[in-house]
Image 1 (cartoon, helix red, strand yellow):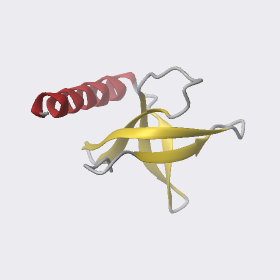
Image 2 (image 1 turned 120 degrees about the vertical axis):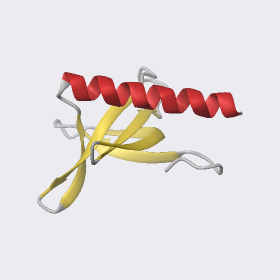
Image 3 (image 1 turned 180 degrees about the vertical axis):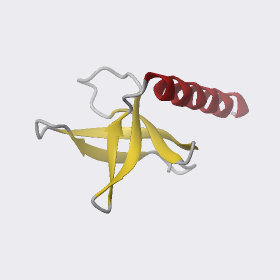
Image 4 (image 1 turned 90 degrees about the horizontal axis):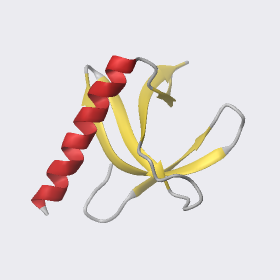
Length: 90
């Protein structure tokens, strides 16, 4: 998703109906699933990295939090490795 021409932004809605705009840092595949790493686009929110998993629900792709601790740790490590490789290449 992220390319040499700039960042991608997505809007997500939480369970309370609040919308948030996120800047996508990276996308990756792990164990047959798709994941994104993003940070809030708003300066009012903490700039921490958010990891989301893409899942199929009723034939539609939705983003959800990663509930399995081992899966979260593995994806986090892959994202960090990927981001540091990109910064080392520059």
